[in-house]
Amino acid sequence: MSDDLDVLWVSSSPVLQRFDKPLLQYLSQYINVAQWEYRHGKDEGGSIEEAVDLLDEFLSDCSYPVHLAGHGAGGAIALIFARRYPQKVRSLTLLAVASQPANTWHVHYYLQRQVLTMSREQVLASSVRHLFGEQPHNTTKKLMAVLDRDLEQTPLLHSLFKLTELPKGGVSMPMMICGSKNDPIVNSPVLKDWLKILKTQDYLWECANGYHFFHYFYPQQVGGQMLNFWQPYHLPSVLESQLVARHLKN
Image (cartoon, rainbow, N blue to C red):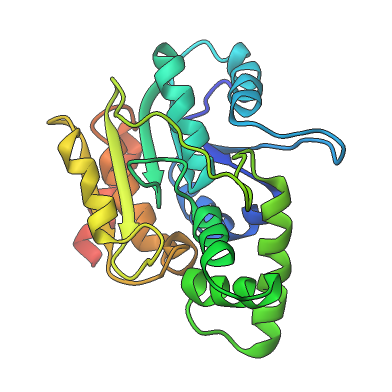
């Protein structure tokens, strides 16, 4: 691990990390970003507890707290970790994470399977529209395959027979909550439920568009908000001058 790590991005499954790359590439122009992803063997059961333990093991050699961030189930892992190991987290940034952090897109998928007389393929196609908006047929097929694999890789133990929950609440360190106004999974009312527990130094921001994976479609806009949030806490003066120059240019 790099000694000058600023931000650690937490990913819940290898198959979803492709949607994080545009944002991480943008952020890496200004700060040192690392990506951690949760993996478990094909014959092993995944769990949020295992993910948190593995993340703790990864950060065991880091001698200072880092800015932690994640999207969806990755954000849920980061949230639980921040509560358990507050001394290791300088700030927490959550993208498309509900105040009930287990309510990810997977819950939306299983609820449709339970209530509607639709096949797995039909619900996956519907999920693509909800998560990414209308897409061409070939793109929809590819995204359906991605979501299908993510259902198998997520550490959240949802199924057709049981939907799990995680403890609600905030964290002791500064926290940023991000969402999209047209995300049907973590919609505006769900996102604003966080306002009940946010501290004075916390921040909630909504992207105008982008559906559930808004950070993939609008990496510069999302990344700019994240950099502004981190700047007072840790970012070096050289970054501050870059941010000022970028805002003056815009």
